[in-house]
Image 1 (cartoon, rainbow, N blue to C red):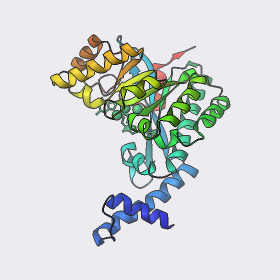
Image 2 (tube, rainbow, N blue to C red; image 1 turned 180 degrees about the vertical axis):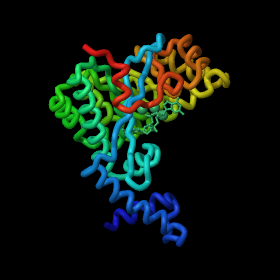
Image 3 (cartoon, rainbow, N blue to C red; image 1 turned 90 degrees about the vertical axis):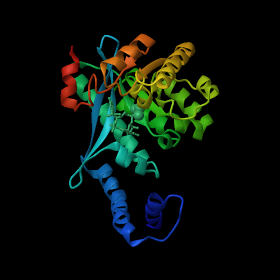
Length: 284
Ligand code: C2E
Ligand code: MG
Ligand code: MG
Ligand code: MG
C-alpha cells in the first residue's frame, strides 16, 4: 500500500516532496479513500454512468454525440470528470475506468439499436495513458464484436498532450484503429504543442477546436484569428473541424461562416441523460 500513500503525497505536494503537515491529513485521507472508492466503484457498483452531448451541423441537426462520464457517489453526490479523471490518470486506474467507459457506451448503443432506433456515431474520450497501454486496440475490437457494432459508429477523442509523450506508439495505435473504421479526433486542439509535422503523420480525421478559443472568438481579434487559422489548417490537410463550447448565437455564426463543420455546446444542447437522447434519434 506504500505506493498509494506516496501517490497521495504526490497529489498534495507535487514538486516539493515533504512530510505531511497536519492540515494535509484530512485531504490525504480523502485521497487515500478516493483510490479505494474508485476501485470499488469500477469493480462492483453502478455509480458511473455516461451522458451524451450532441454535435450538430450548420442546420443545427444532430449528427453525432460525445459520451462524457459522471460519478454519482453515494455520499459525495455527483462528481464531475474534471475532479477525478486527472487522479485516475496518475495510475493504471485510468485503464480500468477507460474500459468501463467503452463498455458502458457500447452497451448503450446496442440498447438503442435493439429498441429500434437508427444509431448515430458516438465519440469517446480516451486518456493518453490508456492509448499507449498496449491493450486498447484488442479491447475495443473485442467489444465491437461483443456488441455487434461497426467501428464507423465510433470516434475516439484524444488530447493533444499525449501525442507528444510517445509519438511513434501513438501513430502505430492510430493506424490500428483506422483498420477498424474508427474515426479519430484531436480534442482540445490548440492548447497543446503538437508540431505540424506530427499532425501530418497521424491518421487523424477531425480537429476539435478548444473551448477557450471558441469562448472569445467574436470578442477577441486574436482568438478569432486562431479559430480561423485552425479551420484553414484543417481544410488544407483534408480534416474536419468540430468547435466545442459554443454558448451563443454569435459564436455559431462566426464559426459557421469561417467553415467549421460541426458544433457542440450549451447553445445547442447540454450533455443529456440516455433516456433524453432517444428524443433525438429516429425510430426505424
Ligand atoms: P472534453 O472532452 O473537452 O469535454 C468537453 C467538456 O466541456 C465537457 O465537460 C462538457 O460538458 C463541457 N461543455 C460542453 N459544452 C459546453 C459549453 O457550451 N460551455 C461550457 N462551459 N462547457 C461545455 P465534462 O463532461 O465535465 O468533462 C470534462 C473533461 O473530462 C472532458 O473534456 C474530458 O477531457 C474529460 N472526460 C469526460 N468524460 C470522460 C471519459 O469518459 N473518459 C476520459 N478519459 N475523460 C473524460
Ligand atoms: Mg472530448
Ligand atoms: Mg474537448
Ligand atoms: Mg475541453
